[in-house]
Image (cartoon, rainbow, N blue to C red):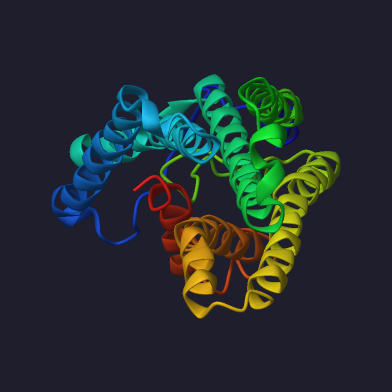
Length: 288
């Protein structure tokens, strides 16, 4: 037993999870996943093409939208190949290094998307609360710097995760819960002390997605306060209408992510199917 505990898996692979008990219908399950993947890739690519080719859309709001589309494309490309590989070919194996690389990109793109949603909220805040200074505040060089900062933040805060996971010994079951690798899932099958990784992961989540969602909420409080002070009912509705799509994107992104985090940390044993469904929703629906 001690010899087993002191070594990692000789095969150096994890087994990705699908939907337990539904192996006989994996081919049928793959159909909606394929459709979601194609629609996500084509839809976001069309958004980028339209914004690039139409000069009238070269404005801050659409630049942020194109950045969101790029992030969603990257998130889809990071997750869907392993998902389709399971359901189409029943291939569940993934090497440790490939798994660590995948979870780094998934968490990085999630953090970048959260930052972009915050920038879009800032854009709506300036447009509604301080419209006269909108053009002077959101200049193209400043937007470029903010976008670069979002990317650097996402990559920098998630970079330690794969290196921390590489230090662990994996001597328990190597079967993961999801059809892709995420930090919460991988670290739970380690037989090492995972407190540092757990504390770091929670701290990063609170300081990135948690802080971003709080700032988005505060920005909409200020937006709502400004909109309610508008005397014209038509102008009030027009101002709110510019925020509807962004609010939908925020809800689709943060709601399943928060739910998945809670299930992983608190109710994993009680709601295994809920964890799988939230995992699919959190990474597949926002790009769609």
